[in-house]
Image 1 (cartoon, rainbow, N blue to C red):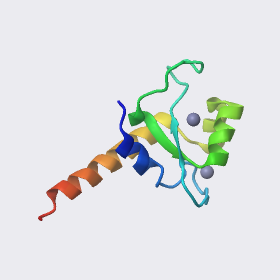
Image 2: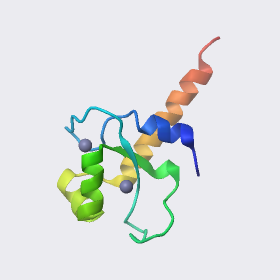
Image 3: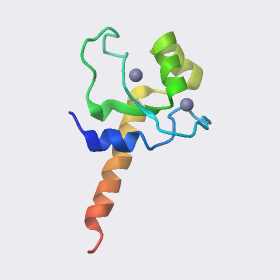
Image 4: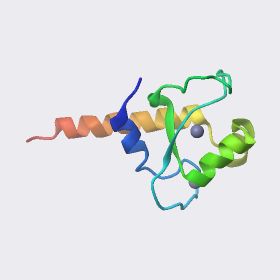
Length: 99
Ligand SMILES: [Zn+2]
Ligand SMILES: [Zn+2]
């Protein structure tokens, strides 16, 4: 799935790391690890993107996703699903509203 609108929206969210107060545009990090090879040549689907501020994004890639998830008690897959659910309900509420 390639979805520029979704990625644009992701970049306006808060950082996925709890209590991160970074102000600014987020990076859209595409989930790595779990059942995926870290050296996987292709990025995962945009539907698996999560917002991370640039410093946290750098840290994830520098130190590896396992230690990052443990340190911040963050599951990339669960976070990605939560973001998708939020996005879908937002889109539906726009479509349902009377003109
Ligand atoms: Zn990334
Ligand atoms: Zn952050």
